[in-house]
Image (cartoon, rainbow, N blue to C red; front, side):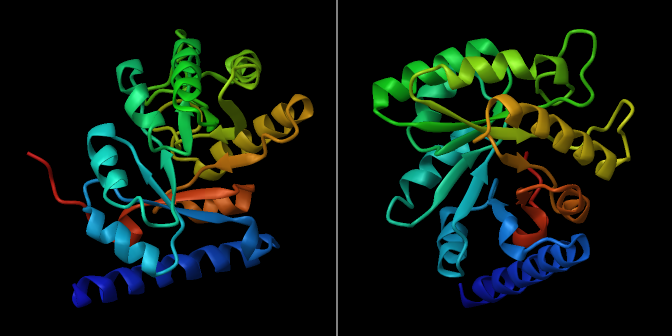
Amino acid sequence: MTDRRDELAANLAGVQERIAAACAAAGRARDEVTLIVVTKTYPASDVRILSELGVRDVAENRDQDAAPKAAATTDLPLTWHFVGQLQTNKVRSVVGYADLVQSVDRARLVTALSREAVRAGREVGCLLQVALDAGADGRGERGGVAPGGIEELADLVAGSPGLRLDGLMTVAPLTGEFAGRQQAAFGRLMDLSTDLRRTHPTANMVSAGMSADLEQAVAAGATHVRVGTAVLGVRPRLG
């Protein structure tokens, strides 16, 4: 366990240094950017070590991994983010532990989240996942709502009991006009965030950037970066 703690501490320090350098290069204060550590496929013991090292925001993308891990760490001062594509039949479970759902992308999901948040007596923060590679059907390859659908979905979240509209999230697209152009993609997300805040001024979170492209996200203005591999190491292959 000491070896693992040392490994995580070194990796975490390296990521924090990258974020600090990116903030300095962009003329931003370091406290403008929050690190969210994505712990998928790694055990609750790693989450516990990360908490001891000062991490306060953790994320998961699969409910079957997240639910038991969150249950095993209820004593820790953590904010849990759900960042994966979310099926409505998993909403009740996710609402039980997630403080924020970053992958809200359709009206049916908003309705389900609202119903379960009210039932649980919780307020759940919501980020709209924006698909910058949205096709004709208005959906992205990895989920998300097309830019043209943001306003309507935002209004729905803001008007739904038990939900709080916190901002926007994106994943750098692998196809379309922004493929291989992460900073341009994140810049587009910032423009969309500016538009959103005209009608929803408190929806000021911008979640973008991962292990490979966090610098571009910080340069574009992201408030949160989601980092897994650079902190926890290369994930074991499943199956």
